[in-house]
Amino acid sequence: MFKPIERDVYSWEVPDAEFGEMMNGHLYIQDDGFVLIDPPLMPGLLQGLGVFGKCDGVILLSGSHKRGSVMASNALGTILYVPEFAAGQIQGKNVKSYKDGEKLAGDFKAIELKTEIGVFGDHPIHEMALLDSKNRIFICDACYGQPGGSLSIAPEGIIPGNTRQQALASLKAIVKVLPTGVNTAFFGHGTDIKGEFSKQVETRKKEFNL
Image 1: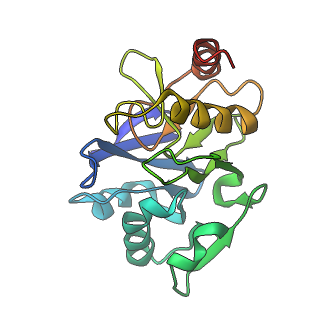
Image 2 (image 1 turned 180 degrees about the vertical axis):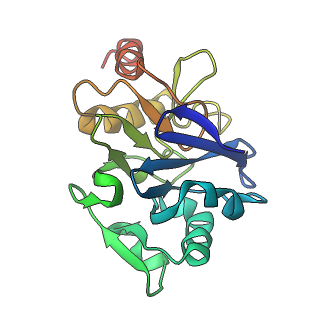
């Protein structure tokens, strides 16, 4: 059910009902429990989480991933951290909004990421990324790894007929906020990249003359 990516990070995947590509959820292990990041639901998920201890929070990175996060937070009786810009979409006693630069459960630092133009059709990307104490990053929709280790930039490979301008907008948004030396990235879609993320970003920058 859970695939170990690193010693303290596990993932699982389920199909996205809207676009058909796979969605990834991540579980970040702490000394006394765990944090869930954009968890899509699947049969047996909540029961399987029991082996990791107590859930210290569920962190939503984008309003578009709210369904599984809301249900997991309610079922586990834990805080749901929601980006401030998406807080109006979700209500509940355990909901806590957060903004760029804040520290969250798991000692994550929140980083706001947004594009200047529409990327998924007319919709811009507006999401949060999370930087952990090991300088690894969790990213929602702006980019995603491929099985061979290369990096795709949204909306490449998801929406047919996407333009170079749209992908460039996503890449610019990533580069603008990406801290130096982030070499491991965990994604809401596609394949996580260990040790090569910054290198792959530089490769894509050269392709786009950025």
